[in-house]
Amino acid sequence: MTAHLPIPDAGQLGTGLPGTVLWMRALLTLAYAGVPALLVAVSVWRAAHQARRDVPDVVVSRVRAARLTGLGAGLILGIAAVWSGQALLTPAAVAAGYLFGVLLAELLGAPRPSGSLRIASLQTRRIRSYLPVWSMPVALCAAVLAIAAPVILAMLPAVRYGSPAAGDQGSGLTLPAAALHWPVAACVPLAVVAVLGLAAGGLALRRAPWLPPVTPGQPEVDERIRRSAARAVAGAVIAIELFVLAAEAILASDGLAVPAPVNGHLYLGSRIFVWSGISLAAMAVAVWCRLGRWKGTLASLPAATRQD
Amino acid sequence: MSSVPASHPGPGAAAPLLQVDLTSPVPPYEQLREQIAGLIATGGLQAGQRLPPVRQLAADLGLASGTVARSYRELEHAGLVQGRGRHGTVIRTGAGTDAEEQARQRALSDAAGQLAGIAQDLGLTDDVVMAAVRNALAPLRSRRPSGRALHGEISP
Image 1 (cartoon, rainbow over the protein chains, first blue to last red):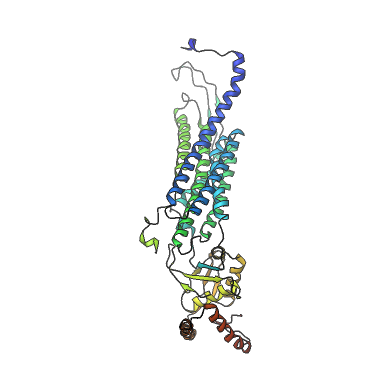
Image 2 (image 1 turned 180 degrees about the horizontal axis):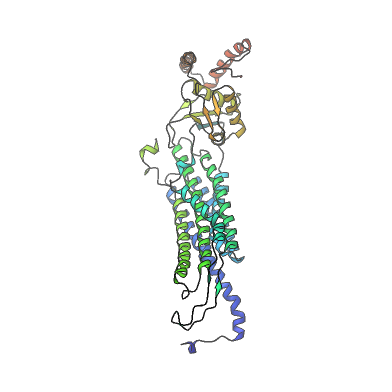
């Protein structure tokens, strides 16, 4: 079969290598930044469409613009990460852009009450009442693991393996002895991103219950707007932490990446790390999209929570 | 200026509303202080109940945080609320529970109700009524330098 494959000449190789690198980076950009950004953008668009039934158009448009602008900024940041050789930071960078979009435009940039007569409730609003119960523990657990990953990896013993005896694996392949290293240094920037994401998310979550009322006489709509903002922030934070954890898992697979014929168990461990990373990334996108939705509609809310 | 009990949309129970009129000659912080003190006096706010964080109330009313913080400070000086740092500001135990104080409050509420009824019959606006009350209080205040108000020594 190989005899029929065209063999490129030296000139073709010279121009083909940069082209291949270009294509690889383009593919990485598409996979790490384009796919999550596209999925989240579609979910934001759909959520805005559904929210128009109950929430004033001006608010829905502002929220949608804030999230899509943040997503765009995150996409640019992600592309920059790919082209600067930090491809595994890309999905977290996209989520970070989205988080800052929500924080700056949706929370800090919300219009203040106007008019000479101002009315406010003495109800103490708590962030917990706006979020699903699982969201905070998931975000915190993922963040702790993501931040602690470099320390954990630094404490693990390095895997060394020797050359298998000839004929042990039934193949004529001879493997040199080698020592693997856990990617501690490569995980540090990821851990820093996890810390920053958690800090920015905490700041944004504190602001969500303080969103001023925008629909006089319809306090349930204001509550819905606050809930939507809080869920969007929580979704972005969980996405950042899970993306970081996914990247660290994929990196950590290098620490066990012995050739399969040398140690099948370690090789399997390495593959498990890789697939865990891919699963975590998929989970991050799913949670991010889900929490970006406007929770239910006013008509679908239970009567006990509507308090008409 | 007056507090308007109303249901709240939030997940909790009904909460009273505060109203601030920026065109009123009374400063916003004083309007807030008066309304919260009134709610405590009439049982609208119970001992141990938490007031909203300063920044939440300031954001809802579109006021500076310092304005709301000043109201809370005045209420704290008057012994009506207690600041508990990160745990927020809560209504003090004993605020508005004294029997004599409650009797005074009931008498005051009754009188205010009668005044409101008369104002309604005469077709007077809230501002006119409030101005009349302030005019009536002004000479009394000059004769009573301690400025004793509801629930203790609240300086005007």
